[in-house]
Image (spheres, rainbow, N blue to C red):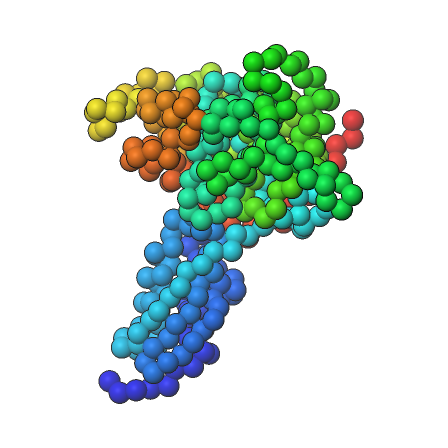
Length: 368
């Protein structure tokens, strides 16, 4: 076949037949196609993904290539560059202006591994290329400093525009601040609700977070003042519920989900992460022992009509890594890495869907 004319209009026409698999609209309408360049029998362009953790990026690439070949010519050489610009639900207000998405990580009861899930989701998102921060708001047991080997670190203060700002601790590429940094590691501090709420407000209003794609909030178990303070202080993109498969954990997780769904709070639930889904011995990676029961996370997700974002196996290395001060995804166990990577990709996917399909969130106004 000889040379023929390609122009930008024809390229856009071809790409308007390619659907973004999650958002169910075409890439051109969504504004995801940029920098089209035409050469002799060749075309190059950039696809702007909604997250670097997009699990469908290769599918999108293949579909774009196929559309060009089908609608223009099978002989065209196609060069596609994929970049990501994480979408946001927030109008940049005076509070945390550079943070695109605030994600609450919640659990109905303690002991389900919520902080472990928070730390590893943060690392998996960071590894995909996203900018990530963590606020550890769990006054009952601030675990994030230990899990990141940062329990003896103290945040510094920098004056800016006549105000003192807390600088988050940076560890392994993650910015973090924790109630644990405010108290000596071995001392028992009794936090009254208003004190903890005031600390959380400072973590938002007085901390220099800079630019972040995702700020994960590790909440205390259950429902408390801290949860209300969170939704009243900043617009929350959505909540993730962490549970284990057994019945008692699911009952408590249901209450947590119902709290976010109350009409006056109305925070979207992005999905469920089931932790300790099964026990897998390191030496027998193919074996799964369902010691806490089976399918609980899926049934909870089905009940509330939200996705099951991931199932995290009970592997000894996850606990060991956390105790040694580094999230488990930094080690080389493929079972652990795959589980957290899949959960992080699903979370990023749900954030993108939520940002495209629902109106922006606003801080909750609750009349007491």
